[in-house]
Length: 180
View 1 (cartoon, rainbow, N blue to C red):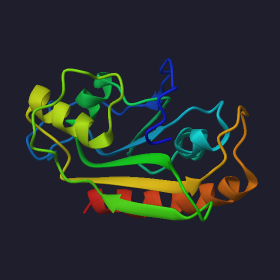
View 2: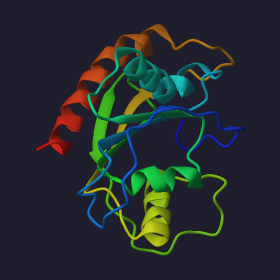
View 3: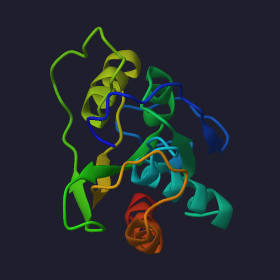
């Protein structure tokens, strides 16, 4: 969940196409897009991003995209971010109505990255990517679903379970833009 401070260790699952050197605008990237679903799958709806990434991996989509499921954003994600045209972060956001899916474009934060990487946000990770690799995706999106259900449970609430297919569809649409 965005702003959830009790996320601990990071576990990552990914499918990675062949590597290519980064370019300043993401052109010549090894994959047209990168989807990063993050959150704690043991805290009910906090696992929304993780579950969406798992669904994408299970479906083998979107075609040509790299998909990562992780508990939190870490500096290790900067390198794959430097190689793509489009990045899509998937998370949950505290709020109602539960299940409302929202998508926003994330601008590059031009401030230097913080020395602390314990609780990276998507825009802080982009700043770190720019500082380390001199390249960032041309477009970056944050796809979130609203929820108030964050109990200790390893399944999404019924409302968010119903939103996963819609999130997969939105990601497929956003990812297609990277191939144009």
